Image (cartoon, rainbow, N blue to C red; front, side, top):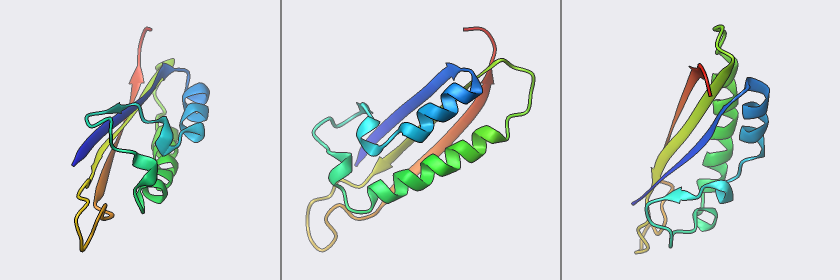
Length: 103
């Protein structure tokens, strides 16, 4: 298994939303097994794209008075290379959104 994380912000909501929208699996640089190429794992790119949409929806739910926000996406993906399910579509993505005060 490879664990990974990508952080957007802290920044103003519109800027963070744009950064999320521009992200791809190739944008992930915080990965505990750098030799794992996330973009080459069957099914992961589609899962990541769906998570991007979910992250933007979660960000839209922030309605408090804070001037900034932070969005963290983290997860893991199965890195098994053996048959019968090499790089199975076993992946999990968690999305956290929070309002942020200060810098």
